[in-house]
Length: 256
Image (cartoon, rainbow, N blue to C red; front, side, top):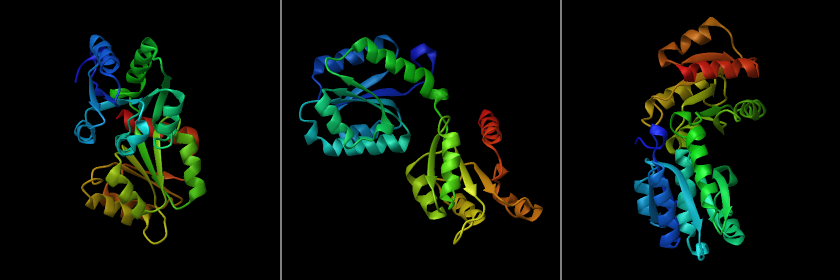
């Protein structure tokens, strides 16, 4: 939907048992700025129904938040699955309770009560300008049984992309059933199920059939390249590639 700054964004979803005045005031302020928002209370079914429209979640950690564990767990899962962030508002104790369920990687910012509305609006606008819509970070899944190498690539790429890691093809299938990614970096040589076989598995699944895949490999021979062309990987990268070259390859791919 077109709104703030004439750009396309989803909705800000306001969650919690916040008093109507505060939640209503926030939604009114957002509406005046051209940012669509909706308050859903702690209704899990409503959160589920709006997950594809959600751009950002605002969770009011109200009194009695300890009784809303089911809602918090669901919010954590849906934000993780859709790669969205959460702003948490409350007193220090209630925010700490929320953080027992929702990891810091999903929390964009914490606001103590009494709420500084203008600072909150500034934070939301900055998020929309830098992390939402067409500016949202691309998501990459690395599939490699070499944990040391995988962590190195994670360190290289995590400042620029949302990066997930799994150590086998089976784990990749399970991950992609719950998480959307824009690219898979797939190790060519893995025990039990090698890279080409994993790519066949990905192509056969509806959740992952169209996801672009780049092979990471220590091999540089023609037979290895030709054997996987029918599976249509988008590239074939040597593991000796350096950080700068890998980043340039990915940037070029996503620009296209």
